[in-house]
Length: 76
Image 1 (cartoon, rainbow, N blue to C red):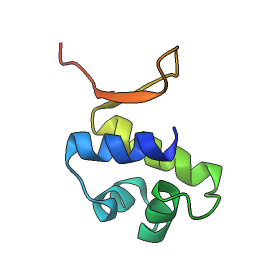
Image 2: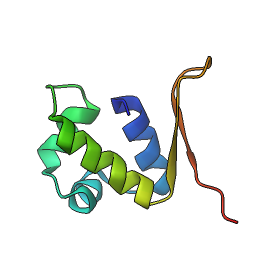
Image 3: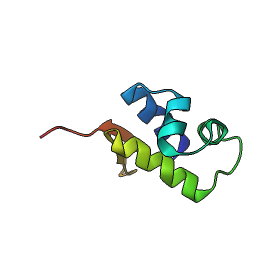
């Protein structure tokens, strides 16, 4: 997951950076710094952010020719 995917995922599910931080169990500054690429965020924090977004219904799309992306998981 890259910072642009994190921003797009948050927008898709309509949550704030603060709400994502709570869901992921990381600090708000960690989410902000990751999304704005201010510093290198630790891998476990990125994993926690990704897991929180996935749990909320986001699917991450690999860069398979068209670049990385996100979408909402389809309901069955």
